[in-house]
Length: 315
Ligand SMILES: CC(C)(COP(=O)(O)OP(=O)(O)OC[C@H]1O[C@@H](n2cnc3c(N)ncnc32)[C@H](O)[C@@H]1OP(=O)(O)O)[C@@H](O)C(=O)NCCC(=O)NCCS
Image (cartoon, rainbow, N blue to C red):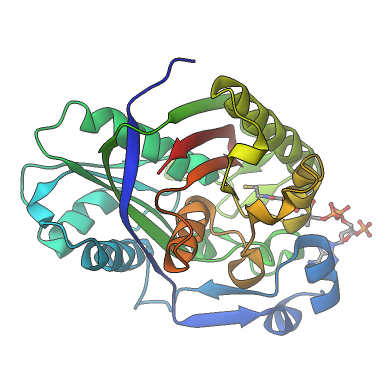
């Protein structure tokens, strides 16, 4: 892995729907309990879009507006908009085109959606970094936005308790700091699956145990590979941002890094699994606490596909 031009995070933002479902609300929908959900997943609550008012587009726009407001940049200097999502509101136009419209961005902007399930934001940051190298404008806006609630069967206790809606956004520019990335895809359509316009199961299908095992191995592999590539150890890293799918998955991985457990940020308790939005929501929370910019971060994600990957960067 060669050392590449890095990225600087200028600003971050996030957006959550109005409706918050606590585990006690899930108990009214399916046979489950707060105790079961919290012990097996670490989740206490998740957000869900209000039908007819909120969706993947509105969340993406609100998270992007939040980041833009905090950035202080001229919005016409944004040359790339990537929205990572698996829950598009329209087949077309893309979510990214709707972000361009609502933010009233200049027409000269490379806007598109990216589908890599829960690894989408990681893929998106790397793709945006690559496109910036070739852009006449200095900034890229990368968003992860999901309304998975529309693709979940709220009578299936195996899946409905896990997922939530939300969006996160980051505005980046090129910089000289460290940047290493890895991506993988296994071509698997069995462990995690949602049908689409071609038919198939309308609601999310999942083999929870298989995904759990895959996730623990994938995260561990990505973290080790990135540390090796950068000739660093976990001691050199300020924060580890893993996709928030299950607290037990993250805890299994961080066991290997005794003494550095505090670097593994977790907020799944409040949001559940927000798929492509989970990593940028963590980023925006860290940023609010002044713990993101100018830090060396290791991000790692996994999801349907089976996709997985990560980034080690001084941002
Ligand atoms: C889904 C998951 C929480 C299930 O936890 P688990 O410890 O593996 O639980 P199991 O699948 O072994 O199920 C144990 C029992 O709990 C039951 N159960 C499942 N969901 C339940 C719920 N919400 N409430 C109560 N019981 C539930 C099962 O039916 C099963 O009962 P049985 O033994 O009578 O068949 C866990 O496998 C997981 O998080 N996997 C990864 C999923 C993921 O991250 N997906 C997204 C990836 S991006």
